[in-house]
View 1 (tube, rainbow, N blue to C red):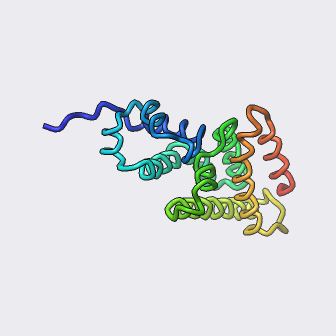
View 2 (view 1 turned 60 degrees about the horizontal axis):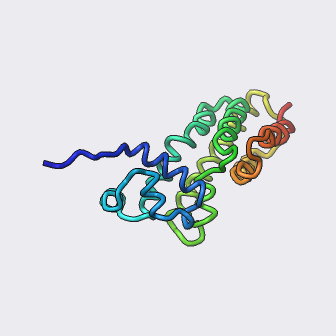
Amino acid sequence: MPRKALYNVEEVLEQAIAVFLEHGYHGAIMDEIIARTDFNRRGFYLEFGSKQKFLYVVLAYYQEKHLSKAFVHLEHNQGMPSIQGFFDEYVKLVKGRGCLLINIITELGFDDQKIRDIGRHYLDRLQIDFIGCLEKAQQSGQVRRDINIESTGLQLCSYVQGFAVNGILAGDTDELTLATRALLGPLSI
């Protein structure tokens, strides 16, 4: 009869997020991952196969459980309130720790095709959602008619990536909130 797993996968993945945020992929050593996730080494390799495959699972979980809280605002597509809601939620996520996905893309994106694909999919989705919200904002008179929606969507994507890095450096300050106001303010009527 198969034995029941003695671990909670969600708790394991949450702990792994913390380890990878603190140390990056290359800096996160297996001994710490095993210790912090309460796995034993044999169980870890039976469940995930390798550190790299484990990272892919962690990133999928991070997107589903953490980044999705920001994306839900964009997907409601209420124009500028959705964009503001996205940035408010994203700032809470990255404040003092950065964004795991952006950190990993930065660290491994040149060498790992799967990470590059995950990153490309994330940025494409983000840009498409921003464009949709900007179109809605123009239709409902929330933003100026003269802005180029596609280039503004790309600009917002670029700011998101910068916020991910600045979130580490800014710590608990209000820098990202002030930057969001400065970014979105000129778009409004």
